[in-house]
Length: 333
Image (tube, rainbow, N blue to C red):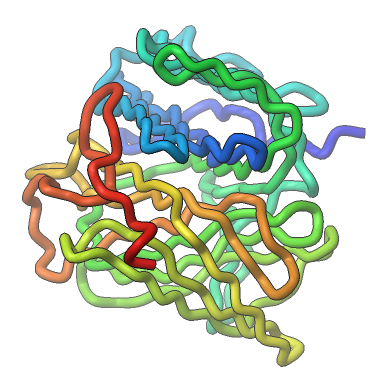
């Protein structure tokens, strides 16, 4: 019996001009330590889609290709697939989901086999249902990955890696966050999670997320995330989230960042008319005796709610195409 339900498949959009749908993969291969982030998404009623794609190797080799506006056509959406032009594609099968990326400098073809059924966010600290209402949802899951990646001339086969997927659908209006922390990942079948602390443009704060241990969802009472940044005030090198469960148990989930990938909405590196540029800090998580897996230790900081483009970063990648990491954070940690 498939783990997937209707919520995991691409959706027919409503007529809302701000309707969007997107599919994200965060991944790491423990054998080679290649890691990355791939997102394919579209504002279908506005006629364009978006690509966010970054990968990194331990030796500092990197790739990033963001495309803010790719022409979108109705045939890019089918009953079981979704794509952004000829760049990225998501396909769902009865037993796995498949992510593909195509570029002259890199390629990606990964299959992910979920550890558990998709989980949607639940508000924390408030009496609220799981967030899947009004034609809007955010199902996520951790899983095992296999496949092949090319970065530059190097080809890597992955037989037993870690993946985390994110799927968002529904109206999404332009939002100038004041701050946001999204710590989401998996340490294998024993633990997967998605933990969010968000401060909206008006200063109001919200906590939401979920946590699954050994296939069982645990109710979260509270959480707080601490993010460590370098001197550029932007590049994340790790941190931790403390989670208090409803049963009184406390978990500390740490993240050691391998590399950072800059993402934004309407412009590649943020700027006027786009969301504040965030950093997808692709990291290795740890929780007690559990070590390994992959997580996205995402950070958005925008204390003055400005709309300037991100530049002059140390670890967060703002370059287009192939590049080399200019900064080694090893001696700082």
